[in-house]
Length: 298
Length: 342
Image 1 (tube, rainbow over the protein chains, first blue to last red):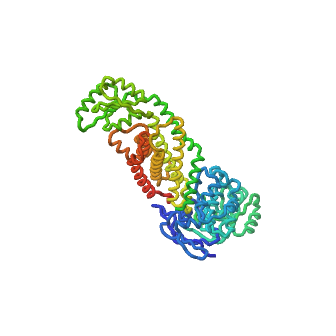
Image 2 (tube, chains in turn brown, green):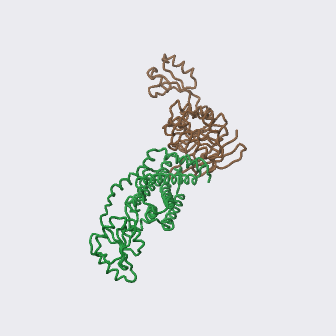
Image 3 (tube, rainbow over the protein chains, first blue to last red):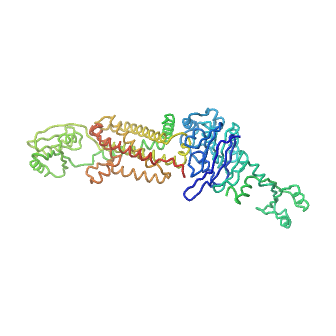
């Protein structure tokens, strides 16, 4: 697999704040690359430097085409990439169709509008004023604008923030459809389930630095052999909790174990009722907590 | 510049304006309401004093002229206005701005045979004018509504240009519309020029609609050429839009831009001759007013409408507007920021 974007020693300083601190990574062609981290981690700054929207204090972002020709990011990159910002408004009083026409006029090469409408499922509200769109419809329109120039690389900055679970799942399906066309996607999110669903590679950022990178499976395997078993607190004798050094969390006993069978046998031997038992394997949220000591959404 | 991108933004901005019914309505109704209001308030011409123009040639025979002037000035409750040129005074008489013109040196006087006040003031002065040669002139009266028309249209253009460009750009910047546009191949020059020409088109279109509609109601005085009026209107609007772009070149705060635009527009509303002439104002104030684009727009348009001036007659105002436009645009382009850098 060849590299689509190479980020080297990137740093961005704002007066006294270092938003991005000497980070390096590669984005593979045709992959969905996830930049993960809590609010303020430096994800948006990183992605906006990669898009050429803001300049870096130091370091470089190099784009490579399929022939492996390299080019440093500049203002002209906008013809070749698609961008969906985290916060953006659309021009008032224009309909969805008029907005698509407006943005189509900006590019030399554009995707057929019918295809775009179908891909982003816009047909129901094509003649609706931008101001009257629901959150999900608006995000689908913004995604369509990001795809309008048929880019090879698409940047999506927290595209599902603020959407209800149903709209989020619909949006994930759209991204999967785009990914199936062998496009490279750079996605920032603080939803771990989103990253697990969509990303081939992830970089976890905190306080402007990369704290871990790899595929989701690699990272979880590297840091967690265990699974979590939860039981209502009143069902487990306190002496058993104490002897096994289990943890009490929000009225539940949390048991961390690498051998589920042996642990269940221990509970049954002590005549502990298994009613309300819940078994969970570690996810990226747990990984982030493990790496930083604080939750992704803190 | 890519014309396809330019026209896409131009068209989108026009659609936004014409679909915003509240803004469109206000732009149409506000000047009409002002004109109707002022026409009603000043329908009786509240300036009750008679005005006599006296030709006072300060060269040879000045002493005699002064002596003769005193002879007329003995009559009270009359305003005496001195002119060096008979033509200038006759022009004012023909437009009912003054009621009688007297040239003591040549023992001549002029009346406007279409003016009731001119007839009455001639009767009042019958004794003093005994032995003078009576001459007549004629002309349609300039009402206050004719005089104030360029001011009100100019003021409406000013608000539309400053707020319609300045405020909108700051709103676009604040809610990241500009940031989204920056992420496309659209250049700052294409965006700014599309905004400028879109607003110029809107302002001229709306002003022509308002003028034409009100003209049916008031039958405005018009001595000059409509073409010249449109040219000075376009120059004035261009200059005011450039000023709006300059004011909005960097700010991201709607509150700040509201304050800055008010700070820019209020002095023009008060000091640019919209409501009253600055002829008798202190020289310092007149000099300050000369730096305001609305002063030149209103003065130029007023001279075309009420004096039949041509563009070459008002070249001072035309050049002033051009120079100011270049300065405002250059500074606006220099300072303009999409403001994506936090």
